Length: 216
Image 1 (cartoon, one colour):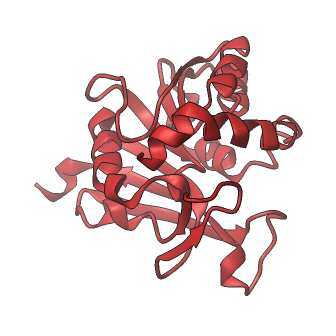
Image 2 (tube, one colour):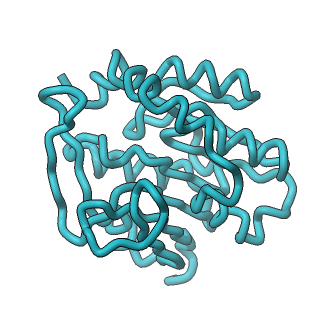
């Protein structure tokens, strides 16, 4: 069975149950580097902006953007329980995974990968990038929050046998295309947001700009 199917059926809910308290305890916006990157964008002050978070969890980040900045927010999440929690916060969320997004082409001004790529099967990465590009408007902004490693690393997922987690430079799924430019890449310790020399603990928040006309 594909790894994405396992997360849809059960492991997504298990992940949410393990992390629900941590998600709810975040102090927004200052404790959230991804949210802080969004607030730096000029588009954050404009009306009618649409944002999609893939791996939205309980919708806490999206709800903050909706309530404080007036964003039109949408989420995709493998956990049915997390989708229910996001809906309770007023977020339009659906159960799904990154390789098949239930949205029309050019739907969003901002697309966020909210700490989910490390659990995507490697055979799905091309499709995942294609789907994000498809729904992202041109020009648009792409944010990636995930584990970071200069070279790909594969580890057994210690919460369930037979699944794997992966660390890599996820920017490369997009920056091979000259229409994508990396504007920001912040590497921190994955749990305390401080700096560390231990590469096994690295997490990165990356901001990419999609502007296909730039190279015409």
